[in-house]
Length: 216
Ligand code: GAR
Image (cartoon, rainbow, N blue to C red; front, side, top):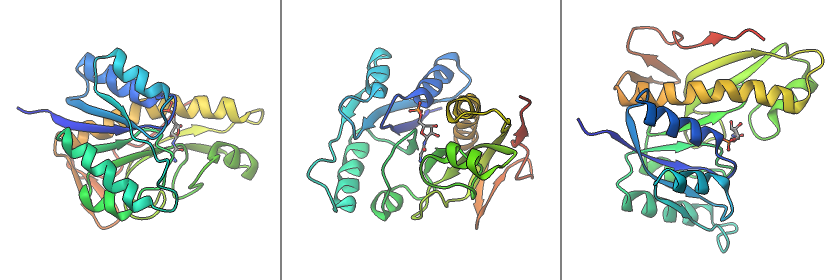
């Protein structure tokens, strides 16, 4: 059977990309990475991809200020060149427009380091500590035209400890990100996800079988 062809968009260090690569190489994720694209020339994610023999390209956003849709059209052209079927946002720090969403409807996944719909946007681990929540975590969701608003696929929960720093909480959340992102992609690759309005049903008949609570 043909493997699902992923296009990974990543702006930074790429630890989520690395987890996906590792899970593919170990056989626990049945997909292939067709291309890794970054908006940042120096992104470590590009280096990680090349180290594993994967096509990795920089698509500069310079010259596209105020022209987000045009930039996304460029991304779509690049993704299609590599026959990408499914788009993974692994720390892609740009707002996606309808141009990309419409090109890949219900075929874009994002990982977010908070329990959505709480704490959308940026610097959310710091915001969670400052707000005083007792639990935070991460969310994998399909991408729609809003910011961090699309249907939720899997969430993992971690405690927020009294002495937490932003870095400590981020690291605790990141460990879970590395697990649930690949798991969500695998569920999609197996054809087990069904989007029903805001809810994503997993084909064993539940919508929360993959949410789990992690101990400190
Ligand atoms: C991750 O924590 C991811 O959840 C977050 O950026 C980090 C990327 O780390 N994404 C967002 O905040 C998206 N709005 P990584 O480059 O090591 O995968």
